[in-house]
Each structure stands twice: as structure tokens, then as C-alpha cells.
Image 1 (cartoon, one colour):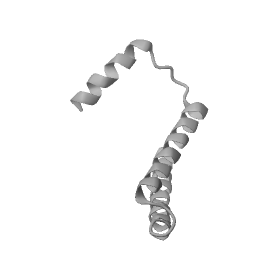
Image 2: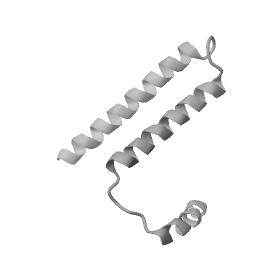
Image 3: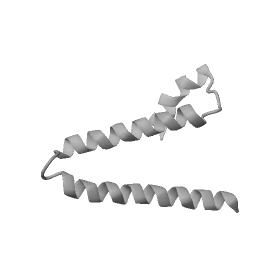
Image 4: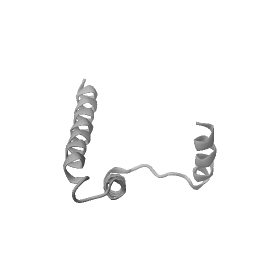
Length: 77
């Protein structure tokens, strides 16, 4: 049951971040930033967050041979 609450908490957090981003975008875009700059900031922030989560919580090592499978899996998906 604890895993369900974790999943729901994560979904709630993502929805709150998306809603905040939408509200900020409507306020900032026409006056201060262009849409391209705002998207660049969002993507850069997401990359930084994913990198931090990887550095802090990734315990599993990926074998070197598995790196060659990723492009084929990406192509087939």
C-alpha cells in the first residue's frame, strides 16, 4: 500500500509543477521571454533535475554492452 501512496504523491507533484509552469508561462512569455527561451529554460531545468536524481539515487550500474542496444530499442519503439 505504501508504494501506491508514493506513486500518487509523485503524480501530484508532477501535476503541480506542470500547473505552475503553465501559470508562469502565461505571465512571463509575452512581456519578458520569447517562447523559445522559455522552452529552453524548461528543458534545461528538467535535464538538471534528472541529472541530480541520477547522481543521488542511481545505484544500478549499466553494463557497457547494453549501451549498444538503446538505439535499436529506440528505433523499434
